[in-house]
Length: 386
Image (cartoon, rainbow, N blue to C red):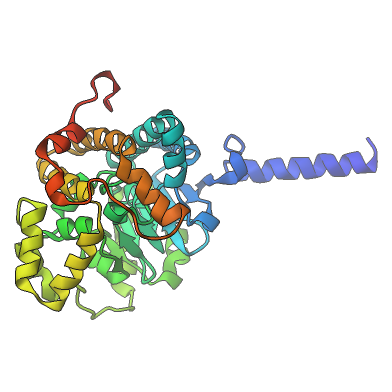
């Protein structure tokens, strides 16, 4: 073997050792969009598309799901940590442009993406190992689905949470999916209805105050927190909670700040306890305060179909299990991708970027109960099953 061959063999071996060390020998996927590593006592998932704010695509879902199931069975893995690369985002949502383009050409990408994404959301909810999501940076749409169903969610001062689907902001449907129909109506009062219908953004400690995060940690301590979790020896759920609690208690940023919506909560609870979008709009108009009118302006820009779907989704979801909600949301996702407003929203926000979608129908009055019922109809053999 010549020197060059020895060198090549050694660098090949070194690469292999590194890959094995990363637990990635089996997971060298398209440009490493998601990294799956065994470190210390934990399985670590890193969403690795920082240029795209770690937006979730089907390839990533197809790597995460089986690995999550493997770690769940593995007696050496005691917890699972999920985080985003690049520092700007945990995950800014699902890669909806691809779904829109695929959905126009053929329904299959939209069927597969939503089906497998919701299966993953459910797997996170059912996960028998403690699951810790480090929701540092932008966390919207699909990123919410990867975190909020897990046992522990750690926010930092850089966290930015929103469910902007009704405006088809950075995310992926025309209603707050990924189990939004389950977790949003279970937030305090009518906060979830408010967040779903306005796409209001919560930042930093407010993500914790709203009940979306279970802990708050100053971002400069995040790496240390992760190291401390990885260093635990055969930890129980309680051991993990103790570490998170200790960091939470010591975090100083915005410690004394009250919840940004605190002063508005009584009004939010009364405005959004109406059973119809029309009545919510009327409540906001009658109130007439600058905060109410600001929300009204936002709601009036949204897709009327979306608004009606969302109110019904949250009302029905408030008494369903997560699996029942995901089954309902899968029906909605397929109807939305088959409809006009989803593609129009993607066009206005992501493709032409003119920010002025032309919704059809353009008026709430034109969205009939019959239209609405069609969105919620079972799909027979195509229904999502667990």
